[in-house]
View 1 (cartoon, rainbow, N blue to C red):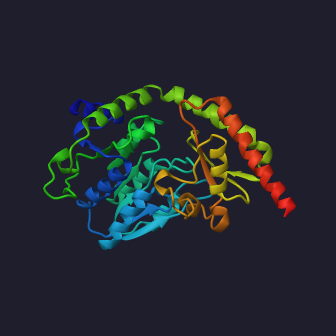
View 2: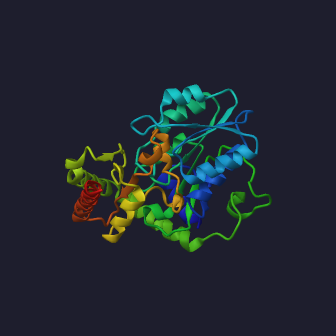
View 3: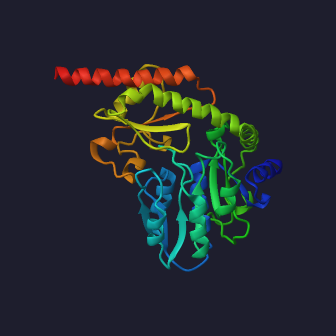
Length: 335
């Protein structure tokens, strides 16, 4: 396990004693935030986040509100990014923590973490970043040096489910969230999942070693998919993305749940948001962050590509979406 810890430290370019193993991204986000708040750089009870964060961040923010913190959730600009000027305006003297995801899980935009880090260091504000979507897809060393904590999850880079890691700056002095905890130097309780950690480490090494190859593959898939649906640009709204493996879109007039079921019937697994929101009737949080509400927000679907996705797969999926659109249009004509 300590060898795995060293390997992750090397991949992130950080000190080994800053790596802690967890059960995944959700636990990692929650514990990292609680741990940072146990040792703020200054007095205050104000936190800044974004409206589009993963469900685990929103849950952590609800817990913070119960403990007396005030939370400001910022929207995205029209391109799906945090507006740095609005972030500056939101910072107060009592702001002690900013938590902003690195990569958006639903439309694939990358947030300006390095620029946000500079603001935080000027104002003695701690910075956490949910990096679940980006570790294994991008070089993370500069990001790791810019934050006070980050969380990752093994299954996002072909490791097993139920295992993850947190980087927490060793320069911080913190108190365990669970009192008298001995595992992981007090960061979390419970028996450590050594086989899962070993498997996740191997998966991470393989992903990091093939970053350029994967990126090239995803760009090809992304371009072919968009080219397949380009003739329906007025009816299919595609949102900006910085991660070519993720495409967020809406077929205007058709609820996302229906599109998802029709795609599933044709052999394609897509989603209407992040996995932790399955079963929720609420629209994807990124739609809220972009100012898309009501029926339009519920039209959202997410398409994501993997290393085993073939070029013909994305072409056929694009054609399937067009067939769904045509069937909907014919039904509207009849009614």
